[in-house]
Image 1 (tube, rainbow, N blue to C red):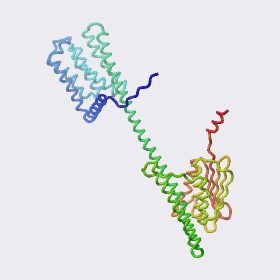
Image 2: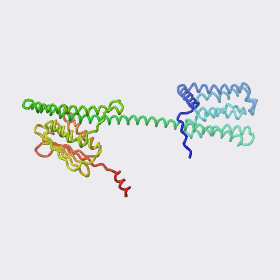
Image 3: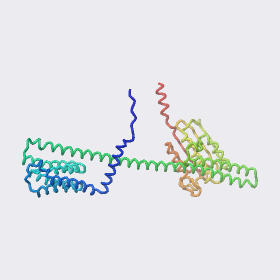
Image 4: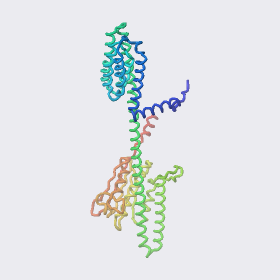
Length: 434
């Protein structure tokens, strides 16, 4: 068994050098196409003129008694049209073929007639295949005229080799054209992938900004509401019970430090530091609900909490969703409910998922009569809090209901249901054990 040889990614230096020269030549041709056309045309005009001036054409001619003016006309008539071969290839070929017919019929047989192969290559490179077929038929006319006028051997000896040469040049042009189309398709695909990559990056950044904004809203909104409640309670207790006022101040300090710590952990994610330099801490979970409710009670809102069933392990994201929904609901109660209002938190761990119901005894609907909880105390009714709760719930295919309670008391009710996630790996384990 042979080991695979490593694949060299970098091209050979000679190949890279030739590719750079080719790219430069193509770039120059795109900037100044007339210069390259003039150089090519000038080369063949000089070559044809040298052939005429030296009399070399007489070595292959069938008729050496032709006048000089005819040779000059044929020389320039078949070489000068090359200047327009890329702009008018079919017209140029027609002109060259017309002179080539005279060339074959007169017996001059000037070798400059072979420049029609260059024009044929340009037609195969740029024009449809139907045009290429008509060009091939057009180029056989001088061959037939020469074979009829000056028969030399069999027809297949005079015509078939030339036809094969035309076919090879046409196939070469088609191959180069296919390669160019393939390269262009790769470049376009690469450009589309770059656009898609940038769009995905922007979408990811927008989603991350939304997530961070939601977390900051929940952290700041809840803790400020708790601090506000503690400050109001401490103000009233200062005159009658200085000890209660001192307890309120201690609670304010503790809540503020907790909020700052959570904000610092959240903002550390936005820094450009290495991951190991960021202080990590677990997100709030179901185990932190008791501490959350105790903090709300310390702020002055009586909260009754009831838990049904056994809190089995849930995904961290679902536990965070439950925590944030309870936090937002209690925060809205503290913001919008009046004095003497109580709240209740009921958590039910069932087989099909977890259900959470947060209610208050009245007044919480003020400022959010539209059915949207206000996440910003400065703009009641903006609906940011309820919108964030719905977004969190939708991530886990849950349902969220929020609205005023029925009855004479204008209370408020938030009900959350998160289905228990499927565990296919457990079923697979059971099947394999069987």
